[in-house]
Picture 1 (spheres, helix red, strand yellow):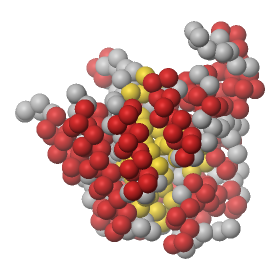
Picture 2 (spheres, helix red, strand yellow):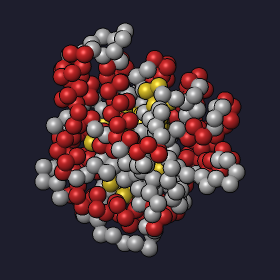
Picture 3 (cartoon, helix red, strand yellow):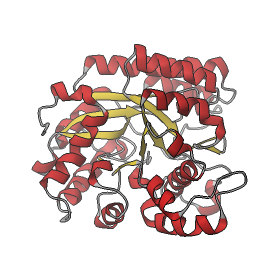
Picture 4 (cartoon, one colour):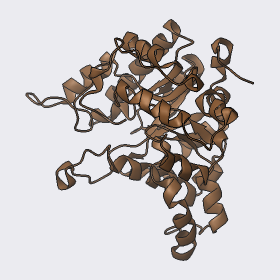
Length: 352
């Protein structure tokens, strides 16, 4: 979720020419700025202070605008999410539960209006695990949403911490899909570095989360969960060999069983990775040494990244010489259709 001050600049008036190999793309990493959440944000912001998202201006978003952007770029369907939606409610509790419920019901209405174009990952009142279990059941069983969205850490606890065990156990039982999005790390102060956290901190957040899930054993214990790491895995593709070398030397941390290098690499390569801001050769080369193409998914982070970035990302992906036509078909839609099979009935570009 890279917030960008010019996100609203690209609208349906633009008609970029996307590569033909990208037509029918399923975007697993897109966001919806629902009016109900924006109202909650305004209520939670001090009087006289302009609301922001991760320290950046709020881009414009409407359902119609999102569809127009998809149409302009040959995107068949988008999976909507809004990471840690209830974090703006400081005391959590019933207010957070009500906000998550209202957002998930609005996601369901958007899907009902456009079942072939949209899916959604459910928001959870994650400060309360019991309430999150209830909301997950409602979102998946009643609303029929496509998966769950959680941030890399919640109040400084990273996925893999025992705090999440009951939630992950239920996702494992359901073979659920979990989209994990980075957030501001604990103790981060924007002024110290001067850079918005989306620029580099989000990459390290995904790295911390994935590493923690592996070294705590949570990724292996809850192996039925389809975990999607955002933004091409942060720095995991580059650091995976180092982690696999040094963790056996220094250990996995107090009270944890030290894993060997093979176990570390197997764990880190068991995630799915979306290619948001990761379609250039340096990113794809690194991922190619970690996972097969069956683990890669497309993502564009709209509207938190501007629509003007979609066509260049598609062009870079299409020009990557190490992918053949079958690789591109898997990454643009084939892998997503396995995770979200309800799109198959209406997906015109599906290739078996």
